[in-house]
Image (cartoon, rainbow, N blue to C red):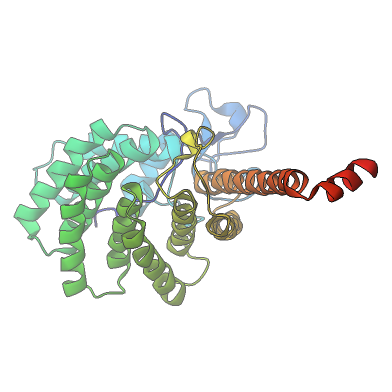
Length: 347
């Protein structure tokens, strides 16, 4: 089946690259596939870990070995068989490129070619910061899916979601919203209101409204996605944690009264609502705690939540410090003269 990517507000480095951990030569790490250690990798690529496996030496493998494993098990193109989490960073990108080279010459409508194209587009967008490279692949996959499977097929709807999410991240909101709304209408009708794919589309539409500053439209959708996921998936599911993080980010922007990216946070000179910031802090702290437990502290999504939480905490400290300064200044400047004299006398 075509990958089901969820659009969440991301705060990656400028080029959008997630760096994976590599094993140092001489360490005890070894490839879990070929069992070759880090000191014997001259004939292969370096040992690299791009998943949520825990432990100092766990989860490392050669990219070439991962490619061979995926040829025998389709799921291994996307998901680590040990920790059951999606591959990230250079591992995900390397696997996606290898998969595309393997299947690109197949007929246009072949499901393996469609999956390979979709996977490469997702990896280019998320791991290489290359939305321009991802766009034609997503467009091709959707066009072929509409023709081969029909507009209401689950995979076609996923492709609508993926392309809509990409347009959202590229700032093409007028192209993103119709695709996401078309997908949502069909998913509600064919899958149901609480299906995982339906909730992903609801979440993506919420984040699109966030991007355009329509918080009154974004908030009820984000809250609904979170409530249903907590009830149907549990509080520690990755999708639930994504909703918690998204709602925290929404509260951050609502506190400012407009969309304010973290890159522009320091230059922002407007007012902030402390109540919304404190709500954002609470949600983001919950996301950090959950993602640290489920994905690990070094996972890029955990680090994004940590970064967002840091901004919220600093802005709260700034507001409280400013409020104290304002109260002190008001006390000194507006008290009656007699009180002023007493204050000076006892200073």
